[in-house]
Length: 597
Image 1 (tube, rainbow, N blue to C red):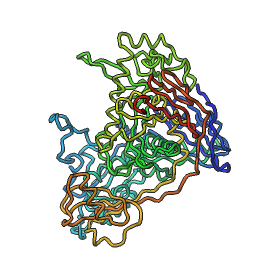
Image 2: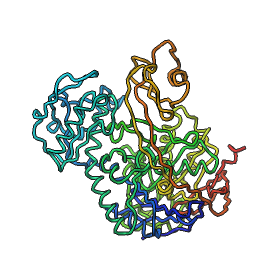
Image 3: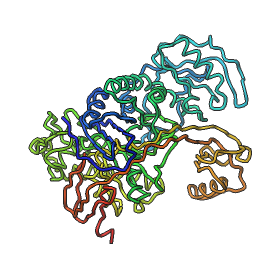
Image 4: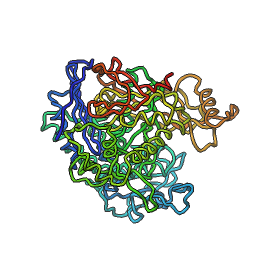
């Protein structure tokens, strides 16, 4: 079952028809921008995602498309569920335990017995090859014949100092590709040419582990798209830009945050159109909630993050995810304490009120019983209050909402307060199918005065895909005194540190780089040492090709709480004390009456 929602008007190059499709855990969303109109659709996500993508394209009426962009959760789910390829790891002889030794840091600071997740490659598939490079050249020649027989679908290669000299690693990768033509081989210098061998090895292993599953899916999708008369899709990467099918298939780790990144792109563009450069994006779907800080119109980025317990050293938008969505299941632990999530009812059977056989209580069931949802949801789902009431049983719906709101408030604090940002200086952009239901309550908790609900809130991730730039991120390692680095690119970021430090600060390239590093160091650590030598660790740049411009407008609307608003693909709950109206771009701008005063 599916719905095609009412069209919104757009200002866009009429000669370019753009389709964006985002696959979520519960729904697959489509946005079509063509001929000055924006059409949106939402269909339930199927177990085989390519089927959902094609169904969404049909539902939105995609025809004669010139640009098709796609966000997927295939890589993320494969890592979370450990359903990747049978992978081997090859490194220098004597360093076969690298993935198992990790760093000295404990898995949990206050739980000494807590363990890290097991490595994706067991020790029996970790192999060493003779040969060694030092920081300044070859110490021992590479002996390819010393490598034992490998039984794996994917092979990750990480040799010491390959970020500085990749000659041994390139020769080894070439040898493995010829010897094992069916295996997916990834060399660490291809994905993360940076120092710190454990993080580089972990990134290469994750990339190799996920590669076969993502590549298989993307090629199936490409064939299905061609049969449907659609162009081959571009794929959203974690950095907020899109790449070709072959680029995405070659290195799956770049697509780990594909869907959440698209939502941030859409939130940043919508907020900028409405005149809000500083916002916190709040994307609540059926399975999870993704949040990110957008400062001066640009989403905050990071160069390393931990996903499912594994460090990934790649450029990503600084998205923080928690297992709290409309389908999150409410339950009590052995002590009687109420929890919500991370387990979700998903699309099938979905929340109990969907009438598809779900029996366990969810956030959507609670919102329905509180009168915050209409009788029929986008996607053709008629809600059953009696089923929701039976599922909740003795659980009070208000308590369920309070618990899930507390979890999402903590997530917003992670990307604001814990990063030195005052949430009171930001607006909150609420989107996703469930985001506008909870946004005002979260804003009150964080003392945020303004909530923005974009016109296409229910499908904003898909809109972000349609409006995303093509982006190729690059990193070059230096490890030299800043004064000896020579001429640097005019734009990008430099990773700088005082000589002898272990970690760096990323500073935008440009004039007065050293002085701006001192100022940033003082702001972060409380002091600056201008007599100490500054070391340039790496330079990060990006090649960007701009997407066709998209500007949305919507019908005028005003609201004063308490009120329920049905939106395209979402529902907004405006509690008492909040009021607002749509602006020229169709964004509903809500303000808290007391805080606005």
